[in-house]
Image (cartoon, rainbow, N blue to C red; front, side, top):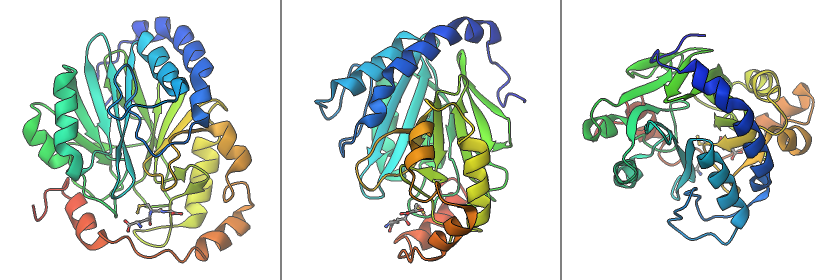
Length: 295
Ligand SMILES: N[C@@H](CCC(=O)N[C@@H](CSS)C(=O)NCC(=O)O)C(=O)O
């Protein structure tokens, strides 16, 4: 594996691993929460949550030096994730949405974070990414996306690449099927996975456009995501029902599409008959150039 920024602090990571493993596992009760309110995590909730389990999870992560925020954009039902090292303040953002650029930049500034990488899990078809404009607002920020996405970005990601932030890092797993350039980003200790549109909670990404292949998606999920530890938290790029988080164990047991044989899965995907995303004709060309096209 190679580090895309080349500055992972291995010794610190190993020292913190055991504690983090325990705390996030204990906190995995948060996987049961279901709420339309977005989760801002840690000690500040932009919309107050009554669910103390979620606060507990985030507090545990923070105690172990990981700041984690799950943010929501309600038009496209997209989750954006902000992760940071609480000591060094180095941070990464995953799948930021154009309409929420001000919110995300403000949050990064309020928290005093050094945001180094804005990564898209794939070339989205339903909304425009903010990475291009975010780079203009945050000095030194680099954009990243899979080299198979066909999109331009500062960092072209491949299987096994590491995206470091302080003593933490995300590992890139190529999970094609929804598109050819879909990545799942796995936290160094394999206790959080950001699955983009590959694996959704009790669902998965559609496979009927943008090089979609249900056969590839089935293999990606079974080989790259379902092989992660059972307690690994699953954070998707979208949810349309108000669900916020799941686990590998839950999805392996309960996902109505992925618990089927490959043949049955392909049939299900062939018969979804979903309407085309409303913004597909503007989103795809824009996202090929970090969202800057036509702005
Ligand atoms: N109605 C939305 C688009 C909804 C949609 O198609 N979602 C995609 C992910 S974004 S390309 C998907 O894969 N859905 C899978 C599913 O089973 O729902 C819009 O118009 O934007």
